[in-house]
Image (tube, rainbow, N blue to C red; front, side, top):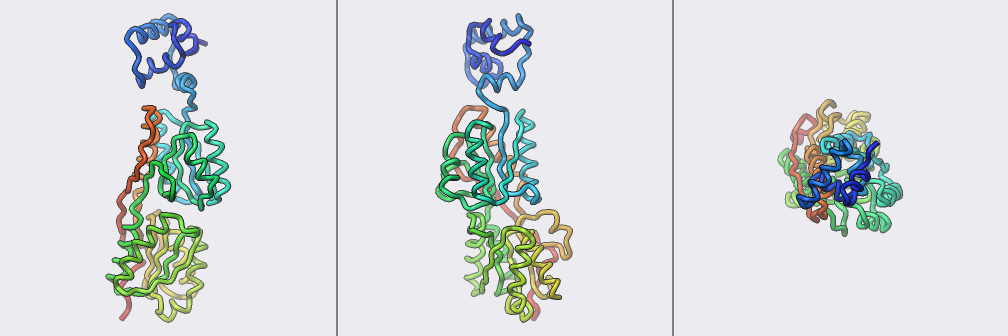
Length: 334
């Protein structure tokens, strides 16, 4: 089988130069390009992506690191990253970390050894110094969905602060002034920004906030709500804002088990707009993230850098969100 090395030998140039001449992604002189194409014709060589990747020291693979692919939000993110990558001739390796910082760090260190060409990274755990070192050493990395404090990288996130504001304005408009906010455990930046946006509006109207934390699972939302059943039953708390839909749905289930009804007794708002919330009863009021744009823009930014050979631009792209009002919220009973 004729290889790219055979073409390079006949043309009297390096294999990398052959790859540049074939792909057109690097400038080569007309003379050199003609030598390469003449050698290809002589040897009946048909270039493949694998051959080009080998010549350039690449794998043709990018990695996507997410907390849990079983969570629909991250499955949708993965689908959109993969769609862009495959359309541009790349394969995607998906690594799930289970919200565990040690697993995150281990995956990043393995990938930094050139097991992949670049990484789309959706962090789910509190970053340790080991993880920060891996993030800033070696491979091109795009952060998506979650920001990393103190690390300057290309970052693509939703407007989480605006999402929090939208929730607060909606509940305030319905007459609510007391809320249980179920935040993300270990205070990831996304959760902090949602809280900041929510609190700014809520405080301006004299509202009272109680807080709990959850691990983004439905069960953690249920447990958080159950710790305040007496306050819900007495209408001391009339609303819940959960930082993702699964925790919101878990909270609704926990209330229902104690015959506290949503939205008649307690209004509930989530964040993400995953399909279980659209088909629950009542349907869930939530903040819709544009997960398609998050995934496609993150993948495109990484692949553009890989194909151009340029460094990734260090910036922060913010994707708009919108409030979707459904049946889980209503005005406070007078």
